[in-house]
Image 1 (tube, rainbow, N blue to C red):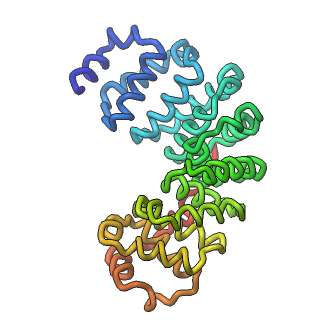
Image 2: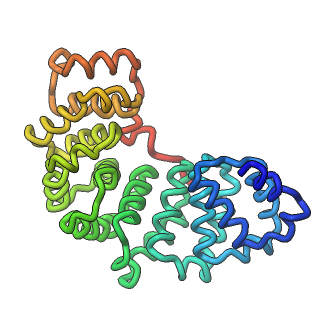
Image 3: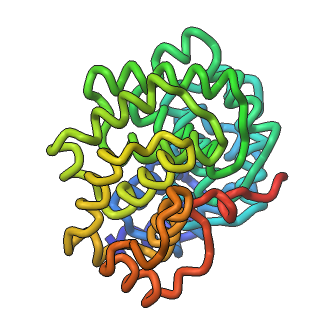
Length: 301
């Protein structure tokens, strides 16, 4: 793969690449989690040619934007350029529900809040012919992204909540998607009773709870507690899962912050918290609160 990346990065060959080639190759590296920086950086130089960027269609642009974020690229000028081209009528008017999920997620992942783009994505998502096609992945990505960026649009959240409820009721949501949606809505202070009830029922199922990872458990705890609907029964199940060795060992600092805040919201004295969780929290010196949404609100551009 390295040899292919080196070959693709050769200026003479890259000059012949069209938008489709750049988008597909970058998407491939991202899917394989192979940050081939030589090819990527050379591709970014190629994008300085206005003709190349203008030639991207909606699918290519959304995939390329997602791939850049997935590969850890946070170049603001690049993302502002991508936003500018996404806002072109010929592009945004063709955006599918998948494109909306990829693009919103990418800008949130890169910590870039672009209000005109978010508003355009919102209006596109609210169109009936698009809203009805939002699958579980797109709903999950959009809610998480808007929560991460601190962009609250109530009509959009109402629509996404209804779509999420439909997917939850039919068993189409995976645990991490439930976690992302619950976290995003809690970060925005948006409560949808039927949806949270459905989430509680889904997560209480042994198979679903067993499939929850460390971050899922922590964010579910915080989201339900933040919205004031964390019942003792659900808390007991989530806490039991949190104390399993493989889950406990993989908690990040953000996860531990979320759990610490959850206990605080529930009025649980630190001395009454499970000893294993206290040990991890104090051992990691978790002092920031990113999972609360405090550090997850991005500057506006």
